[in-house]
Image 1 (cartoon, rainbow, N blue to C red):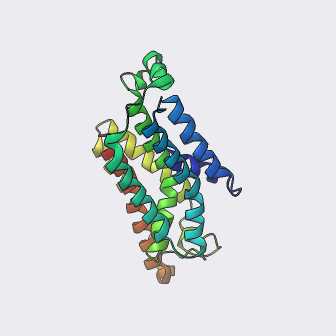
Image 2: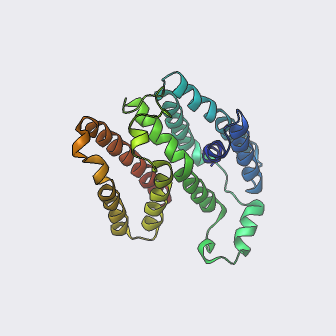
Image 3: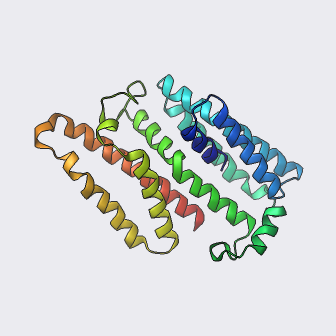
Length: 235
């Protein structure tokens, strides 16, 4: 959740340290609202807050120094450690649990605090964090380079709209998957390919077709994996 808040804050405002502070503050606030005040839980919350604060700095370092593998490695390591230590965590409750027990919204009916936190974190990851992961993988595989990212040339400028379409697509896949309608999610995936086909098959620009196709396929598969990983966590 902290990483998702950091990336979301960065997409809204690029001021140095502001996104990390937002992510860390959100992590601590949610931890306190969920009643995670015991020493083991409090240490875990502070560790997650520190990671959320440092995530922006690590990602910026990865792009500026052409070390896209660095933030990816840090994220995988942090997720692995969190998964290994998850059995030691206490059950979330506190004011958040009491609010969930009283809220009249049908979509939240029957959700305990742990399930709500997991759902919120997964949804946040589908937003700006999904875009960040896609860009990191593209840079790590050489499909785009950090130096050219944001320039006026390159596949990322030719296939416009990905920063908006990516989150929408992931949210559609996640929502349809949670509703048990994976067939409809597959249709969304197929529709994206059809809509991009004219840009990927322009006969007058065959020199760029291979670059565009690689960019499209790598970015799309990473984006879909982010949504599918979220489904696995929530299943």
